[in-house]
Image (cartoon, rainbow, N blue to C red):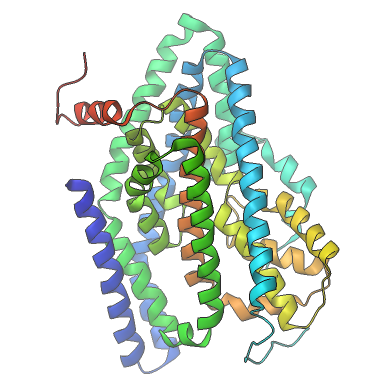
Length: 428
């Protein structure tokens, strides 16, 4: 009941935020005043996201170290890692292919009835950090403290894997350290509960802020493009759910039901990172073991951003169509392969999808100014991308848990959760 109540409040906050934003957009005299008011409203969202960022690093570190330590040996880590990356690469390929297929069939850029930005206009997005060399060298932190300070999830994962594997190799000698880290994880999950109580306020502010500045009219102007993009998001959800059904059977419905709150939170704040703590909790409620969820989910935030990757091919080819830049099948496949690599650097990069698209446009001599066509509605598009990332990572984690025999029966998982919350006696 408590979980359903929070979900209801988040949904109500979304609708209320849209209504308040629309009134502000209509009543405020100038765009400058609307922007000023929106800036103050968005303070609540900024504070919430800062609180989320505050807990991400210690939460990822503590849960991942404990999970790896419980695996017991490096062979298990390698086996689970290979299975996880196999799923991620396959899901990435299908996401990119779906975006490429849809934009070729629907041709959203061909019938665009908008004035095109001048070819020489710059989007002012830094793209140099998207090279393969930069990504590989960025994998390993120069300092664990720097990685924690900057919330570099992938670097924290690398450090945690080494730390957890080292702790596991010591056996009982390192039990005190492992127990301490496990207590930290419990404390961080409690802090997560405190932070999540503020989610409806953050959702209200996020929606009110964006509608205040953009208005609802922009949705009508870009209605066709956004409708076709969200059709792609819906199809991607269906494909992900079908893939999950193949391995999880009817329990995929239970999983989608459990993660509806993280999905709604990611959608309304346009941040999949904001949904990370709640997604972690709901996956354990679903029955996936802590050692699997704490290992696979953080990796997913760097390697399995399905919604963002579908958008990369969709938006890049949309801009090419708008500027009438022909790309044959071979060029499009090359673009897809490039995005397979560069998209893995998304985590921690502000407006990551736009940065990667900008780099891809430059590679194929497509005017970078085309980004200005979609930058105004990127917040609305990012909402769908973020929610899809949560769905993709949740299904990936559950499937890997199933492969490893670490997915408990639903009734058993729920009984343990109820016992932890003091709602029912623990199993004998």
